Image 1 (tube, rainbow, N blue to C red):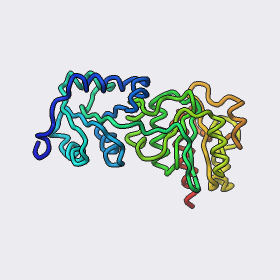
Image 2: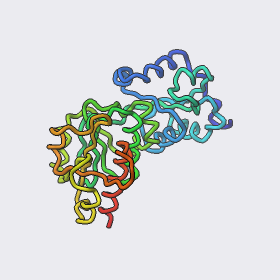
Image 3: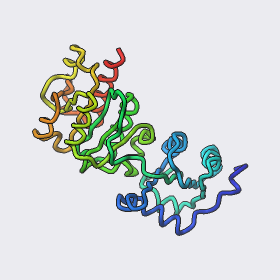
Image 4: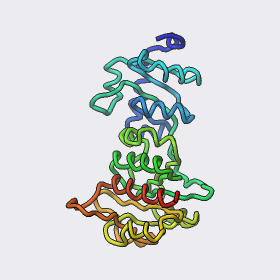
Length: 268
């Protein structure tokens, strides 16, 4: 590796211990930082101006472009041994590339001028599902994703990895009460649609051009969905029609269908 790589030194034991503490929610909250793993997520964090404090690589020659970008911003860069990677990684096969940056999710609902599409996750606890929902929201142009109190931490490494960097692209809110999130959506002029079995069919709403209106999709927990009292907070309950033999859809798959259908209607 050439250029600024000469300024790159091995990670210190203290820095490694500090990074390992970010694997726990408590550690992240205490430090106000989180650990990002993988080339795509690291690239997105650097590209979208996140407040990065450290980049760490086990293969600096391979990661030369990302290291150069970090050094150009005055970000500290360190190298890792294989044992360092094993201590930090929560994947079976790690790419050996990590980044530490300030928390990106907010505890405050954002002010959005003329919102069109929002996702509200009510106690969604699977990190992979949460990350995929964030990725889908980003892909289909949503204005924000809200994870209500009781949901997984959006800074969880599996959530960040499943988002493939989308957690850096749009506002993500965590820890607010569901009622507060619904009130915020209504105050912003959004209809709130609860994605749940039963209710009206998604394609029926599409045929009647009801999805072209500003919309917040309410998604429930993977295990128990949306209890009656949560569905009652929505303007309508909407189900994804299925014509095959599957009994149901995975949460993130249903989210992708609802978001794509709504985004398409809003653009026609």
